Image (cartoon, rainbow, N blue to C red; front, top):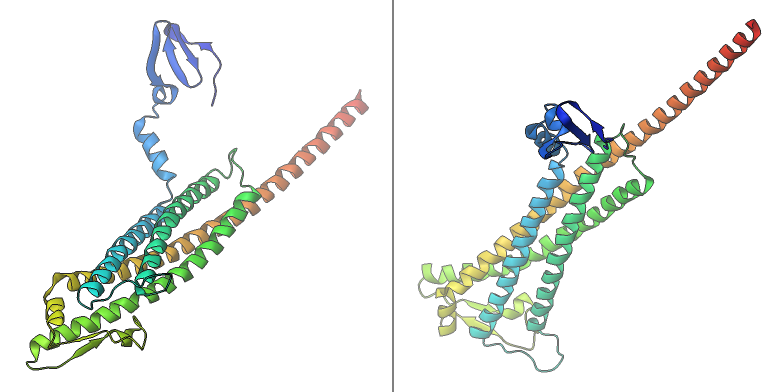
Length: 302
């Protein structure tokens, strides 16, 4: 809102929403002089925040942080366990072994963290603009066709990301299952004396059938692995990563509900805008017709 340079009482002036006297700036806006203080401004600002999108964004960031952070550390712990207790070494050359796959998974985690950090910001900005468009429906702000297309695009993209996170959650449950089996074998050896149990990596698909990488309860490496805190820590890190992936799925579902609701509101708002435009146009035409008839009658009388 802009104001003209107008002199008021007590040698005060008003220009572009602020008041000052001949000696300088008072430091108070016209809105504050009219009783619209800081509290009312804060209430108005808080009313424009898309709280549903904010909650979904916080949940998404928390889930992605847990999945990426704990998943990365769990993969590093897995490498140490394989090299220390199973005496596995990296294959020379370009052979695709388990260590190369773990490195690829780490790079994927880096990409997921960066991509969903940006995507969360985009969804939050879209929520702000959609909320502003709905609240200012009868103001100067107009809902554009581009804005509606962007909302529809976000709905489709969020749905695809939800399916992707479902796949990630299912994939993350595999190492949790494997470590649970290892943890169960270690617990059974401590509970049952004389139990002869073996852990073969071939049954998990970590090594090929031709390689024999197994340790049994009678071996020293098996006892050292079960007594170490590294196994327990890696197991729980994978559990937390699985929980983070589940939180990301819930965040995607929340985003879908928010985006669908905003799309419905925007669609209704667009219809209301068209109705108001048609109504005002018809009223203007009726007013012009009445004005023309009044002028014709006045001319006829004169």
